[in-house]
Length: 205
Image (cartoon, rainbow, N blue to C red; front, top):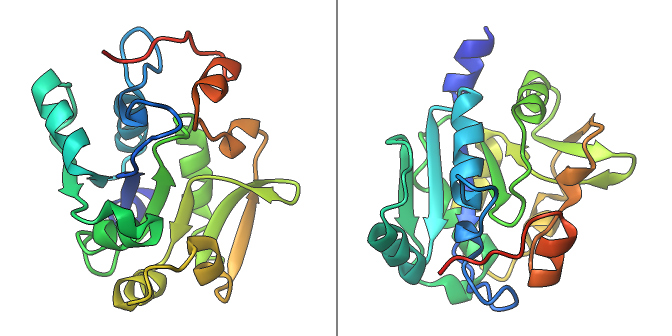
């Protein structure tokens, strides 16, 4: 039953922003000596059994990934957001348009590379509890977020791209999964965040 659920679940990584505060694309930040943020996140989802993984990027980042020949699994599909200036909601919508119809979907930002197989497994085991599943520590919820097919259809149909994703999801039923991993709340948005998270201050060239 668990395997069947995973095959009906996709994943989206949002990485189409300009990364102005970081001054380099966050997808290409080093997670460790062998992997970038992008490689670490995609690997975790695929190891968890997610069969369809979409990474939404801007054109500049897509070109850099191709030029530097980063090793990524074949199941990772890049979608270029042609209008990244429209914001995160439009970026999510762009990704969801490429998800298999009827699937549920995880989504998260590229700036939290700490997603774990354990969190993904736990969230998916609760997928029947509500239209949205979020990992939480007390009252604070983090990433990734798991949404069902009805929400996916609603996001795709929306024409107001100024929507804040959290506000848009507010009217849907939510199940909070209690986890112990405080890193679900992490956001690596600028060099100081990167250093405080315990990474070496090693920016990609």
